[in-house]
Length: 173
Figure 1: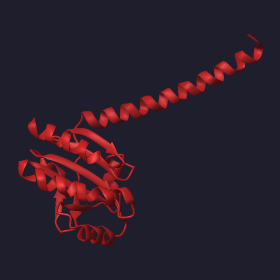
Figure 2: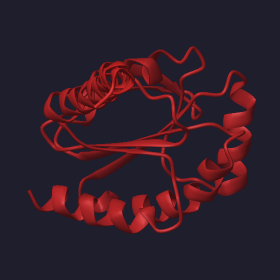
Figure 3: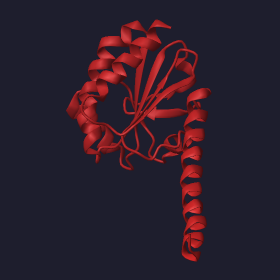
Figure 4: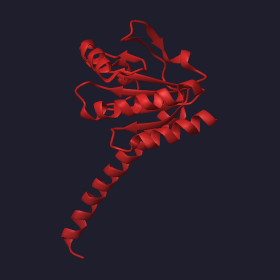
């Protein structure tokens, strides 16, 4: 072993320690989110009324954070609407939380897509910051007791199958 090897090892160890710290912090943040009560909020809906999350207790709730400029969000919406229609009579509530600055974008897209679930307006991004969500779309599943059980960031074809399995699981509890 030469002197150069000694210089590289501490630097490598510091880099690895930094990565491990970042991974641990991310895991801790996710664990906090999925172990406790969902942060309560009240938002104005596209339909004109206010809706408060706490008033949904007793139902399985899906919060879907989306924006009109987000391609995967637009792709996911029809799938979410089908899940809402299929399970709402069983105690399932889907709340689409739109983060567009212009409420006309949210209203226009929800009308164009024929969405049946409530679309809430988070123009100031207070709720998306409350949930620490920066990826669009992001989906949070909350059980009947108001606890966050699942968090999904992003969307790819097939995610709706996972959503459906998790919704059914939470409805059975």
